Amino acid sequence: QSVLTQPPSVSGAPGQRVTLSCAGSSSNFGAGYDVHWYQQVPGTAPKLLIYGNTNRPSGVPDRFSGSKSGTSASLAITGLQAEDEADYYCQSYDSSLSGCVFGGGTKLTVL
Amino acid sequence: QVQLVQSGAEVEKPGASVKVSCKASGYTFTNYAIHWVRQAPGQGLEWVGWINTGTGERKYSQKFQGRVTITRDTSATTAYMELSSLGSEDTAVYYCARGEGYPWNFDYWGQGTLVTVSS
Image (cartoon, each protein chain N blue to C red):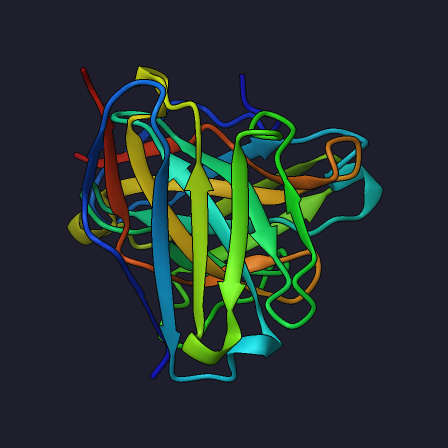
């Protein structure tokens, strides 16, 4: 059971917009800690996609955007492309655990 | 360019220990934390712990407390993770990652090291 809760799977057709959710609690998001998002293609290391709730590292397309409100966060992907098919993880810090925490991951399928 | 290069795959017997290394280059090693994250086959990411590469301060996930030791060698710009009393549930890919900001995001990752625990 992950501290951050993500839906196991999401799908969308090429060109569509999809939103991936990440639910936290008062000891992580609700305590003001940021959410970060990672993309992982199976068999490879995760890649930082969004940091500090809304910021994209250099090289990440602006089709990816993040937001956080209260105890929940979301990642939006617009203009879905076949190459976006991957696993996506949210991550934050939890004050009750005094450590970093991940969501269980969402598998994005591009139909 | 920033690189984290990990040691190769390991096969260990139950009850044994394993030590994985993570060689950093392309930045000032002591300016960033190193974290360890593992991923069991078909499962999600799990945070193991971190080390302040400047001071040597470290903290571990409660789940691994007492079984994991993270160290670093600043002259070699290398961090290490040792896990003891291995069980089959420890079979996983272990990643090192650079911690940016505080609390951290993980902006660069090693390629991963597969640790297989099997009798």
